[in-house]
Image (cartoon, rainbow, N blue to C red; front, side):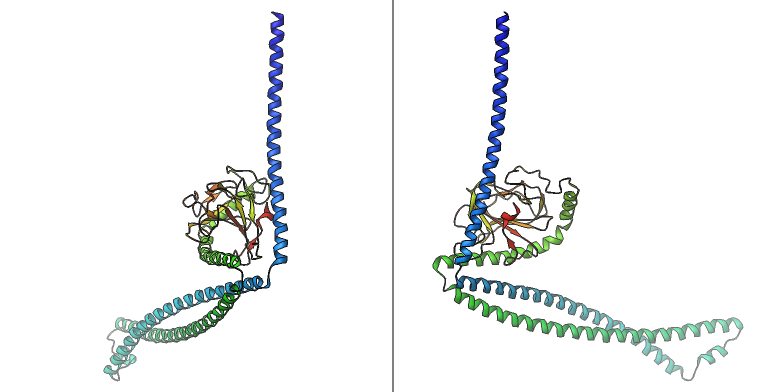
Length: 404
């Protein structure tokens, strides 16, 4: 019996030792996995940096010229957009001034008629004066009453004249303002026409330079142009979203600042990929394209080679500013604004896979869509951009890896 008890105790000890060993092995395995992921990220980052140095050195003069012209075209387009805004505002001002002028003229005509009627009445009465009217009083009560009426008439006459003069001056000021707005409108339209001509010249010159590129380079440039055009439209939606969702972003900013860590609060399903300002938007896959294409053209993003349907996660806490399913360019995309001023773009997702909506607050690591091959894409991948203020396509896209 004693031997049986010793055997049982021995078996229990062995079981405990095996269990502890399994726990240690599991922890060790998880640590190894995380280290391998980190090493993979560092390796991808180093490789991307080396590729960047190489393509920058090999970039042809023609590619550089095309990029310069693209930037110039974007600047011209921005000027035109700004002038369009000015013209719209001036047209609104002119319309309001014309309505104000019509109302003032109508009121002036009414007051002028009252004055004319008063003058006609005075003329009909002939030489009858206010003094005659007072002297015709039959009693002290009549005198006081008549004096009051005379005073009121005199006051009304004075106020009527002052009102007419004020309205006349207001009409003159409105006319001057209207003429000034019309002149400013003419200047803005002339400026727009001038910039539009410069834009056409730059586009023609760019087309000539693009024609000198190789077939592969031309294909890449077409892709870039489509992304740039799509980006301009998306940026307009984002500008509207900035005011529309300001309250959500401010609430998130306060929540983040009150956090003890001072960083993103998390809460998503994916927590891997480093501990920087941003985390990788996918938990697997390597970087297949860096900030520059092999031709040397600016890509402005990194591509992760992942299968269709791979979960895509928010790189940090933020507010969704825009989502859509385009047939070309970015395809199915999501744009998130973060409280630190960064803006992240996730593109080429699976159509219909977006699981967030504009105005929604999302957490770091929360799934926002699934990767895919939508839009202008040559294979399944996730296109990931990071932008800084003022978030335009040509000059504000930065390397995401510096934030991991």
